[in-house]
Length: 542
Ligand code: FAD
Image (cartoon, rainbow, N blue to C red):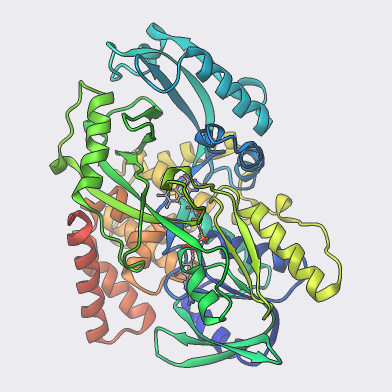
């Protein structure tokens, strides 16, 4: 059965008539990873997400699969080692989606690091993560570094190191993990909000969830309940009356996007900022994105405001590091803000708080997991599912996800991704579509691009819009798209990376979704209004 909205209605009926081994609240990367791990160990699984999959932090990260070089400064060797080793595993499981990306780390006069500390730091980083061969860090003198990146400030740069990281699309990674869990038998539902928990002799054994689409309530029974709600973890713990002791501390991270020609970097760069923090500048297709900030946050979690000071902070950091370019606020084409669900530690600032994950088990049996990284999702899931199995069966079985390829194991190597991309580039030429489009499609959808191109063959409209509609048809049939925002924000990332493509696409997309999903004309108008609002407000800073 494909992962389409057609499946959703029958699955919603099914969930009320079964008792699941595991019920997971939260459809970000943490919940997705737990769903896949649990179902692959033979447990029955239902996952409930109140909004769209990955609509929380998991679509608002820096989109790197990385070990966290800066955690070395905080002496977090275990995190760097565990998470760093995950990079190569995730690349193997989804080579088109977790892409090798060499990162340049310059050292500068007056900067935090010198030649020796950069070299040693990168050596330790590689060592802890088990990096081998050509991927090991390489150090360069001033001239070579400026050849690698001529935009760097030649008056302060003294040299630099180049080391291996990976780039991804966080929302798509989350979705591919969810789709893989679905293929293995997990029921994963978006737009289902958990509103109440029920107990049997003090143990949580069922919950009420509200279908946001039609307002209907459903009761779901389970043996174990997992709270993987990221920034909302404490809310569910409160619902369970078990919020005591350690609690979350949210910090906000903002990214901005500028056209590539405004900051035409040769490769991704991780650089020092005056306040001792570090910032990424990452070229991606026709844009470069820059981030992130890290400030305490206590506002509305559903609508995270981006402040003008966040933008100014990022702009002044890039303008200082790359003095030949001058980027102004008007050059910013989009921005996003995400919340880090960190664990509070008295006396530590936002940037000093540990990124490690932590599990809380309440007297009711509720298992909550918070903290952690996108990159470490598989290991976090393993720990949670070990706990669940011990609870249900008295013992735990080995985790299997290290061997479960995402996207049906479409590619076995990165070379095969590149070969496939060449084929798609050729294919798109007949429709006068640029190689950038092939890059975009293959890195988002992998071999599933074949289905999208089958779609364009059968339509009259063989333009960019025709291709976009074919992409949307694929997402409706295989990726549980239920609103225009699901498509333009999370499935494709167009809101962030190609917002100019959206205005002409909104109405045809609304017509297609309306026909497929049976929208009334009022619903269609509301969807168009909401999408237009999101598009118009992407650059409203307060
Ligand atoms: P979320 O993605 O927020 O998912 C929780 C979900 O629970 C949400 O979708 C929410 O809607 C749902 N939910 C809440 N309440 C309910 C309810 N009552 N019923 C049903 N569903 C509910 N990590 C990296 O490895 N690499 C990076 O480059 C990186 N960069 C980052 C940059 C920033 C700015 C930030 C903020 C984080 C970054 N991280 C990075 C960390 C990483 O993004 C997070 O650790 C991860 O995305 C958290 O995922 P999650 O599933 O726990 O939370």
